[in-house]
Image (cartoon, rainbow, N blue to C red):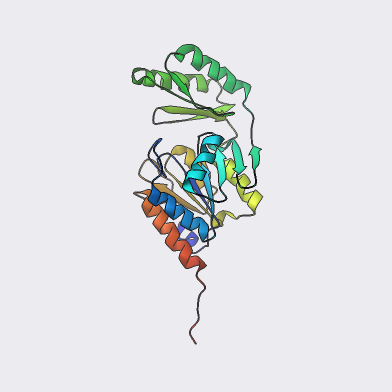
Length: 245
């Protein structure tokens, strides 16, 4: 199914990346964006938040958005949560390789390191601008030593390191199985390299901005354009068709 066929399919689940997609990096989500997402949920679409952020942060974000039954994919796919039913599925534990990487990074950058409170994925960046490039360069070198066990995403000066077999796409595949949702019934919205795996598991991949390309994706300049498109599409798909008499 290509993107044009997908336009005619009713969407059951929309998966949203956060930073750079729903909002600028580490900025609050606007009231306009929140209102449209709540409307989309109210007309019958499941809403999922997918991010490298930790689970507790994303739970609070879903509350701020006013989503009633959020699905959360945290730590770039390491954990899935059904918040309304208080269920969590951890797809991996923190590995020895990631622990080794943590120790090496801390030993060298202890005076300029900020770490996200994740349980599996290791997410970090330099809190001193003059050491940012040095940290990124060193982190890439260290990660390459464990290339068969871990992989990493680098963006906006931050680095996310996670087990080789985990990403947002793997988690989304599990979400589809749990809820009995077909690929063609899923829309995925993102803006970065770490979103490409979930695009592969969605019938309708949607990109915000120009940071990445994906062959089957539709592109939009802003998240409001994406949300207006999705809301309009779903209203039409869910409106009973009347026949001429």
